[in-house]
Amino acid sequence: MMNRVLIVLVAMCMFTVAMVPKNRRALNSEEEKTRRSSTENPTQICAPRTPCGWSVYKPVSRMIELNITNTYCHCGSKAECKVSEDDTGASALILRCKLRADLIETPES
Picture 1 (cartoon, rainbow, N blue to C red):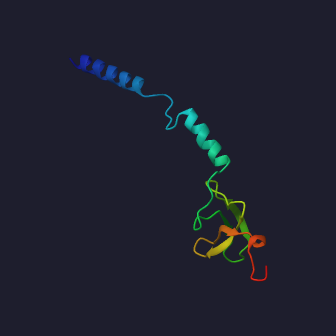
Picture 2 (spheres, rainbow, N blue to C red):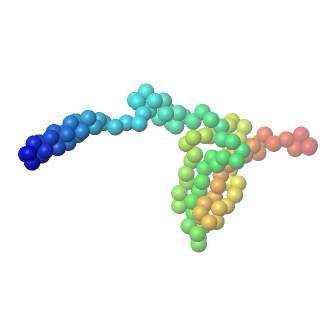
């Protein structure tokens, strides 16, 4: 009796293991290609409050250690990625899209 239970248990384990897919992927290859190409060539323009990048610095010397570019959006042709605020808690400068200086109209022009 014990041998039969053991054989049934081993058989159930073997069938369970055989049913598990060997290659688990959340995306199919077409979706992955589309997603990869959209991150390589961002098509969205960053919203006004969305950072276009970050510059991480050393807290004491404030020397820039790392520049990070937002890969999900970019500044439009009339804007450039410039420092907008200093997040001292994260030791990082937050960059946002700002209108290019050469496109700003002054009262004299």
